[in-house]
Length: 299
Image 1 (cartoon, rainbow, N blue to C red):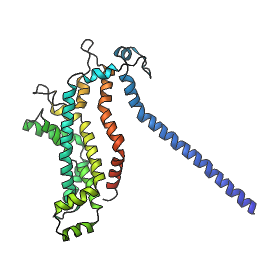
Image 2 (image 1 turned 90 degrees about the vertical axis):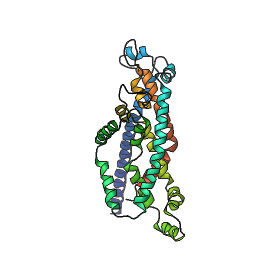
Image 3 (image 1 turned 30 degrees about the horizontal axis):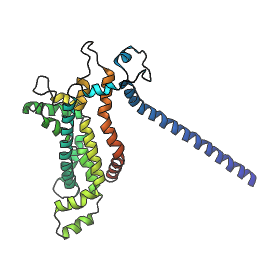
Image 4 (image 1 turned 45 degrees about the vertical axis):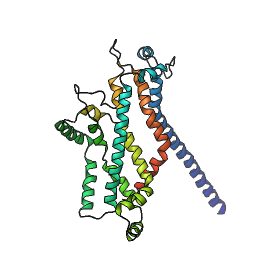
């Protein structure tokens, strides 16, 4: 009897071990496939950026490695079509919209998390409901407003759409609500004002979330493409100076002789544009994950 029970137990353990090995193998295989599918476009982008225009247009099918490395594509891309002006516009818009957006997000999150006023929950629910509306609808109404105000081809029209984000207000509000109420009551007993409590207590304790929001807002502004193309109309004064770095990728790199797009040079431009965000993400990914996860644990 004991031998039978021992044999059955060993059989169950063996099945569990085999099942565990198979499950782990399938999980690793799935992760490897996902990693390859994610990284392959970046590899192909770099591979294309190192080819000559002749190799790119005459190779069929395209090779996985360039026959000859052409680093001059990067140099030529930087020196093509006012790259400095596009980069300066992107930096100005990104920094300005991020700084203004952080202040507005902090004040709004503090009001919804700590202050008591009539209709607070209703107002916050209405703001959250706007997240259900497709962004394209907002772009249409915003574009009509901009055209009526005649703000096309200006910095203000590129900055304003990136200043306010209900989602970031929601994240920071949740982070603020995790701070114990006892700290607020103790500060009020000591005569501390709401503004002083905000900047001396709540902001330092929520710095991981604020750091994440800052990075994400800057990345969103850097990657903006559709809105700058909409509000910078052809024929306006300074159409090109008001464009962003992502628009530079589509407005440049056309061969005047063949009227064909110089794809290797364009891919070099994509690498140049993507590199700053890649570096920022590598160095600050822990802050991004920590801030977002910390803000999502309490509603």
